[in-house]
Length: 174
Image (cartoon, one colour):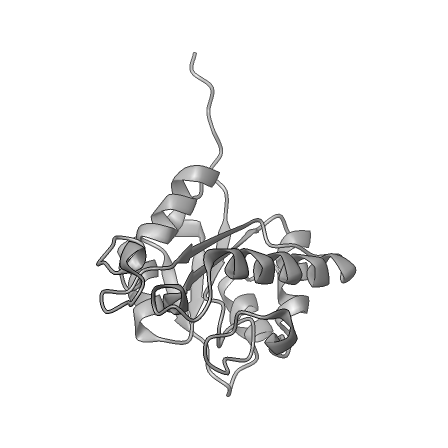
């Protein structure tokens, strides 16, 4: 008899404006500031066995403002700060492309740039995620479209509702 694989639940987060304060093209650790309740939200999700992913458009790469190594360094910085709090992000996906980019290698339309669902779909496949039991949290309509296109319930993050409350409503056991 074939092995039954249990699908996993996941929380997909846009980065800038959801997990950190969006000051425009955040790529240096010195400019990174966590939004209120973001670390505690991730920690609670980790404790409940919900996978935590970041899906972020990083057009600053295509625009020549910073490179892919800078993006990876910032994500490593985020992981280090989360580790100090006893939390972690399971995986990151970012899109360095933009159709009007000045860096030729990244000047393109692609399936990963939100509102396309490529990053979300890639994580679903790589981590055996159940889209119907998962949720995406973003601060832009393009974030929500990316989640919905992958079959993931999507929630708009605003300043009026703390992230931890929004996530707790989506994952009721938190």
